[in-house]
Structures are given as C-alpha cells and as structure tokens.
Length: 401
Ligand SMILES: [Zn+2]
Image (cartoon, rainbow, N blue to C red):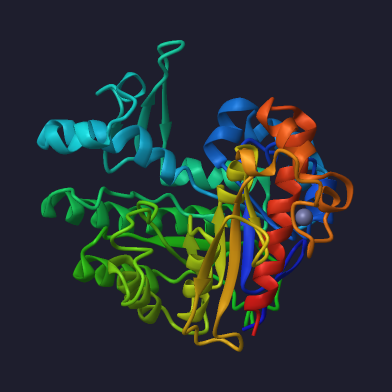
C-alpha cells in the first residue's frame, strides 16, 4: 500500500508526522512546516482539551479550520499521558523501587492519580480538581476535534512491571479498545467499520488501536490478536520509547526492541497500516520501514533543533550515522549529526547543509545560526526547526518504495 486517503488529502507512505502537541509545531508556523515538506501532523488530545477545549474547537468549525491547516491530522488518545501521570503511582502500591526508578517528577505524580477499569482519574495540583478520561470521553473529545485519524485510549505499562501488572494492562487495553470503537461507531452513527477499500475511501476518520504488552512477546501477541479481532483501520506499536542503547541502536545483530518490533509487525495483517509510535531517530525509522511499519511520529527533529542538534547530509556534520542491510530499494543510508553549539562552527560561514534547499540553509550561515541558538533567539529556533523537518521529509522520500 502506497497511500491513505483521508478527508484532508493523501498520506503518502511511509509517512512521518511532526508533533503539534498543543496545536502548534514548536517554534514554527504551519506555512513554515508546509514549505519544509510536512504533509501531516499529530496533536495531543489531552493537552488540547485541557488548554482550550474540544467543544470550543468544534464550535470554531473543527480542528482544521481552527488551526488553518488543511492537511491530515492524527489525534492521539491521551494514553501516553496516562502512562506518564499514572503508571508511577500505580507501581508505588506494588513495587515502590520500580516506581522510584521511573518517577522523575514525584510532585506531579501523587497517588491521587488512578487507573481503574472505568478509565483514568487525574488530580490537578494547581486547583485541586479531578478530571476523568475514559475510552468514551477520549473518543468524544477527538471526534469533537474532527481529525482525519483518531486513536483509542490505551494503557501503556513499564517494561519492568510485574507479570500480573503487565497482564492487567493488556486486559484493560483490550477492554478500552472495544469501548472506544463502540463510542466511535455510536457518534458517527455507523453499525460497523465500513470497508475503506484499501484506504481509498475517506468518508470517515480512520481509527487506530495500540498494541501493548511491554517486553513480553506472549502478551504482545495476545494484545495484537485481541485488537485484530475487534477490528481497526490502523495498528500502533505502543509502549515506552526505545532509548536503551543496548537494545535499540546496538550495531550488528538486532537488539531486543528491534526483534520485538519485527515480531509485532508480523502479527499485523500486511494490508493494514502499521504505526510505530514515537520512533524515532532517522536510522530507527529506516529499520522499521524495512520490516513493514509505515507511519511514524516523534518530537526528536523539532526538540533537537531547538538545542542546536541538527540532522545533515553525509560529510556535513560531526558524526556519521549509517543504516545498512535494509530490505528496501536503497539498502544503505547515512547522515551526519551536527552539534551546532560546538566551538567548531563559531567562524563557519557555510550553510548548515550545503545539499539542503530549506529557508535556513538558503539564508543563514552556521556561525550566525549558532549565535541565534546559543542565545535562544526565536528566529534561530525557527530556522533550525525548519531545517530538521526538511531533513526528515527528504529522509522519508528515500524510504518510499
Ligand atoms: Zn536545510
């Protein structure tokens, strides 16, 4: 499959979606993003709901009109916020040491946050109020926004949680997926998921579910089978971002998460969209494309840009990254990392990347951009973000079959 038709145009696969967490890609405008080659975005349901409200946005004509962004938008479910706000407190009850290892911000994660079969209860430290996110309310919020792809509420779990906790997480994940789909059908007045005819029909938003199970192959399999039986348009790989150097980016043989991503990809029917949430670095995306994943999102290019960490073509930066043995038309790809804040670029008058056509590379020198980023000047953060997004859009072009 080469593309998905949505209500707001095609998504050409494999596709990368920058995160517009609060309704904006940090530091740049949507016209900037378009010029950099961005064709679709992700936005964060819970943050949008808490900061402005989906009913308000519905009243303003929906999320596309409100953002003035006429291309595809995917909304997440709030599941990641469930993970970051609640899992630590859940673990505190049963595994205090594990919770401590994860709980980097204890002030935000008091034991007043809870997960039950009903949903997730959040305690707001600022005003003492509670809010409840359920599979049904998450879907209602998302359909109020009226995006092109919605996501069911999921229940991520720590990889080192106990077996009983991981089993419970998969059980809840399946129940919530079923209830999310029922709410989706109820709101859209559908009896069942209509056939999208190989994703060419754009008469309704697509709905994605999230395969959980942490590092347990059996639980991942069970989660995938449960969700495939319920039936969705898109199957996501959920869980903790894969940052462990010993498992993900290890040179040579495949690391653990690579093996897991490979395993889960093969559980999903090959004619379905496979979304590797939160992956990641360019070489990780390339690997995932080669094993069947075709939708990606990550904050890395935008966040890194604001810290002067730039992705450039081979030979242009400080350190070369390479990915090889890809089962793609291009079997080997490489790029460089550029730490622009380094002293090395202080007097460098060349563009950031001599092979790049973006506004940043056409208009400023490394030396000047380095200065702007060091003083956190908005125009510098903008130009660096434009460049990294341009790099990612060209990288994805290389991976298209
Ligand atoms: Zn550039």
